[in-house]
Amino acid sequence: MRTETELAEESTPADYEAAGELLRALAAPLRIAIVMELAEGPKYVHQIVETLRVTQPLVSQHLRVLRGAGIVRGTRSGREISYSLIDDHIAHIVTDAVHHAREER
Image (tube, rainbow, N blue to C red):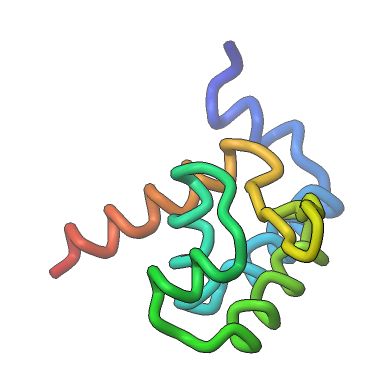
């Protein structure tokens, strides 16, 4: 396994740009909460709305950003769409950030 230093030395400006886009997509607190919910497994929009106690249009707006950034995918089932994370890396990034924020208090 390569070390963090080796990975940094192999990274290109395009890699940093892509990482910046990912972090920008995760910059909103509600999007972080949505990712934390989806880390538990796929969820329908109405489930996210109920859990986070925000409006459906707001959740849909943030899911659109996350989908555009390649963080989540939607799977249609009849009239509903089930959302899930594209991969577990995103869940780790967000979970680590939330835990780090708790440590700083």
